[in-house]
Length: 111
Image 1 (cartoon, rainbow, N blue to C red):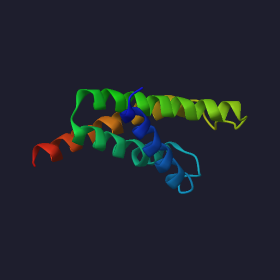
Image 2 (cartoon, one colour):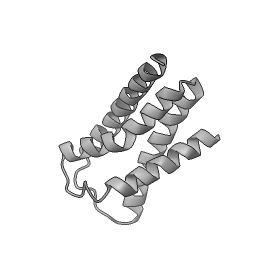
Image 3 (cartoon, rainbow, N blue to C red):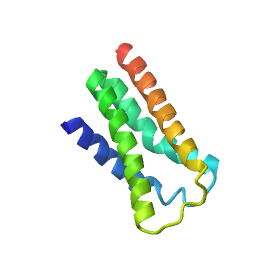
Image 4 (tube, rainbow, N blue to C red):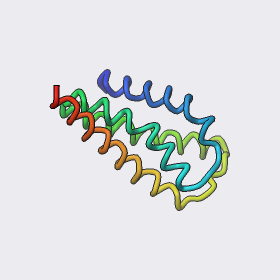
């Protein structure tokens, strides 16, 4: 793993710690807003840097972070409220990550 992967993991962990107290209730809208708060900044940073490897690494870091969080929840015995929200979670992760990359690339190209 390269340093960008671990940098993205660190940023995701810090964002998770900051935002977890604000999004404690369940629901699809709450999950979407939480995913926006976590994954849009990573996409923006990767898009702003504009290297293909950073884009690929951002996807890998975000997906592994999300998978790891579900694994920790499952192993910890914390019940998942609705398993139907899990696919929505991963699709919104990809959507917000890509949206952040597009905006980051546009900002970088205007410099």
